[in-house]
Image: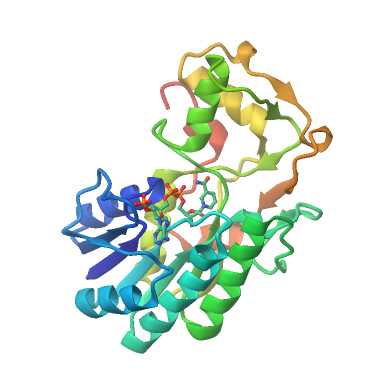
Length: 275
Ligand SMILES: NC(=O)c1ccc[n+]([C@@H]2O[C@H](COP(=O)([O-])OP(=O)(O)OC[C@H]3O[C@@H](n4cnc5c(N)ncnc54)[C@H](OP(=O)(O)O)[C@@H]3O)[C@@H](O)[C@H]2O)c1
C-alpha cells in the first residue's frame, strides 16, 4: 500500500520510512526544512501550517494511510491545527490516519494513565497535543491517536544526546529522580505504529514501554550502555527546580499491547549493555 509519512525527516519518521519500505510499501515522506537520511520512494516538502500544501501533497500521493510523525513543539499552528487539517483531507479522500501524540497530554497528578484517562495538560506543548487529538478524532473518527512516552534508540534521540552532553560536561543541567516516564524504543514504536496503520484500529492507543523509570535512571542506563561514567551525571529533584511540566506520567499500554504482535520492550531491557 502507499503510505505517506509526514515528518519523515525526523527521528521517529526516519525509522517509520525504513520499516515501511522494508515491508514492501510504497513510501512518500515529507520534511519541513530539509529531507532526512531515510530513503523513501519520494520526498515532498510540507509545512502543516499551509492548508493548500496539505491538499496538494495528499491529492498527488493519494495514500492509503498517512502517519503523522511531525513535531511543531508548542507551536499550536503546527502541532494542533495542522494535524486537524490533515485529518480533514484524509477523511475526504478515504485515507486512514495514524496521528502520533504524546504522554505530555497528562499532568502527572494521577501517576498511571490508561487510554480512558481524560487529558489534563499543564504545558503549552501538552495543550497543543491534546487539542490535536480532539480535533483529529472529531473529523476522522476512524483515525488512530497513538501516545508514546519518551522515544529512545540507536543513540540518536535527543534524550541520549543530552545524557552524552551531561556526562562529558558539554551541557549544564541535571537528571531528575522524581520525573518518571515509560520510555519506548523507536524500533518498537515504529513497528507498532505501522501495525496499527495496517489494521482496523481506531481511537486512542498508548504505546509506551512497561518500565517506569526516572530521567536519572534512564540517564544511568544510557551511560552504562554507551560505556560512559554514570557517576558524572548531575542529579536533582524536578519538584525543586521550578520547571513547569508533569512529574510522574506512567502510560499504561496494556490494552494496546494485548492487541499488537509487536512487543514494546521496557527501558531496562532495551538499554542493557550489548542489548
Ligand atoms: N521524541 C520524543 O521523546 C517524543 C515523546 C513523545 C511524543 N513524541 C512525538 O513523536 C513525534 C515524532 O517526534 P520526533 O522526536 O521524531 O520529532 P523530530 O525528530 O523533531 O521530527 C519532527 C519532524 O516534524 C517535521 N516538521 C517540523 N515542523 C513542521 C511543520 N511546520 N510542518 C510539517 N512538518 C514539520 C520536521 O521536519 P524537518 O526536519 O525538515 O524540520 C521533522 O520531520 C512527534 O509528534 C512528537 O510530538 C516524541
